[in-house]
Structures are given as structure tokens and as C-alpha cells.
Image (cartoon, rainbow, N blue to C red; front, top):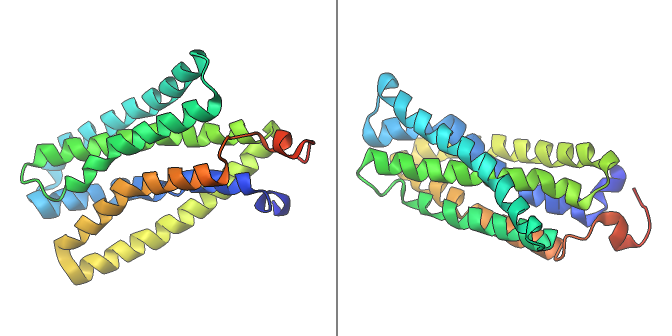
Length: 209
């Protein structure tokens, strides 16, 4: 692990995993948001949550399929992966309006689309690791990225609870604003760290791992 922390591609994977905080937001807070915004009780939450997670299921399949489709067309892994992640980021953006609509089903579809976009992003974030690292290092790199993103999720969940305590329902606006834009910033970080997604051992010109 000490060797992996010193390799910049590790931090590209970490950047790809940072948006996991948004997934935990959907898992823990979407029902609270729907209750606060649209006064949905426990029975009324069943169908909205089913819709959200069915769309998320579709996204997890579509994300892997799309990048593979581009690769089969002869595109580089770099172009295929990053274009797919960019399309995911764009599809997620409308979720920032979830707090601004007065129609609960519009909000549900926006959250569902964003959850699907996240899962499509996540499928590529995991594969990014095997794009950059040899097989013997992938589990450790995923572990580092997952651990750091989980820690950030704990902090973000606590912070959102604090914001909601002080600002009430308005606090959800800031949460969805972050949820909408964090993917674009993460993709920018990935590109700056690894502009061409060259595997670690090829970039160094020797097998360092």
C-alpha cells in the first residue's frame, strides 16, 4: 500500500470513487427528502424507491455496455472510458432541480436518472482500476479508493444532517447541487492525473508493480 500511495494513478481511481458519497446520499436520504418535500409516508415511498433503484439497475448495465461498445468500435480505452463517464455526468446534472419541482414524480425520475448515471459511472470507475494497474494490484487500489470514499461519505452524511438541522428543507438544495456537479469535477481530476490512462507499468517503462 505504501508503494501504491506514491503512484499518481492510484489517486485517479480515488477521484473516480469520490462520487460514491452521492450514492450513499441516495441510499440514506432520498426517502427523507421525499417525505420532507412531498409529505410521502412509509407506504407512499415504496413505488418511488422501486422506480429509483430499477433505473439504477439499468444504469449499472448500460455504463459497462457503452464503454465496451466504444472499445469494440476501435476507440482507445482512454477515449471510451472518459466519454462514457462524461455522458454519465451530463445525464446526472438535472438532479439539481429535484428540490425545485412541485411534482413528486418528476423528482423521483430525476433522482432515478441520477442514480442510474451513478451506477453507470461506477461500472467504469471499477474498470478504470484494471485499465491502469496489473491484476495483482487491483484489489488493493479498489480497497484504497473504497475506504477513502466511505470515510468521506461518513463526513458528508454528518455534515448534511448538521445543515438540515440549521437550514431545514433548504439544505437538500445544496446536497443535490453537489450530487449534480461532483462527477464533472471528478472526471476533470481523473483527466488531469492520467490524461491518457496509460497503464502504470507502461508509463514507467518497467514493471514497478
